[in-house]
Length: 254
Image 1 (cartoon, rainbow, N blue to C red):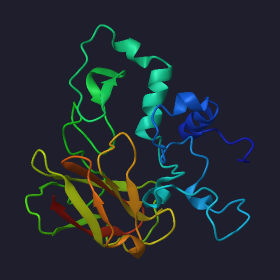
Image 2: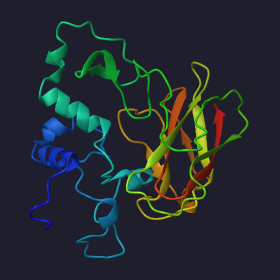
Image 3: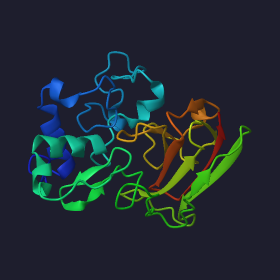
């Protein structure tokens, strides 16, 4: 099928719609939604049309989020929420009490008694660790109780598979701390597959803005950099399209 006759995907449709909106409707907060489909850059075209081929066409203000820009894996949670808001989808649930959604979840217009959650949360009310789709996933909720560094050794995927997959499989981890404390994390061992945009293996670390994507990492250049959570929860997603994802992530409470 030629490019001109290609049937648009849901990602194409949402991206076209978001790009045609006035900026005042897209950005209701001062933070840039790096992972939105409305972001014009793509992971594979970071240098496209640049006068200097060694400089990014679009550079993230916070470089920890450079790999999150231009993702085309799926609509971001903020994209879906924006579409539901624009089309007043909550009207489908006008006769149903609003469920007690946690995190940035909201009443799901397709199932009014449950919540629409970011992918890093599961359960009826976004209160649980989601079930990962990857085989050999060792996802877990980890209690951080020490101010000394501890290490999460995460893995997900098939170590015997060397066939690239079109869709990523994933695995999730939550690191929690006592109320009133925060968490520091640092990558100690990166995934095996390092490539710009992290298309084959990656970990995504969300420090507390759970309606947005987190920092996506896959290369040794990310090792050792310390990040501090917003509250007492850090959510992590591991994704693999090739072989088995393995990584080490240090954590402690402060």
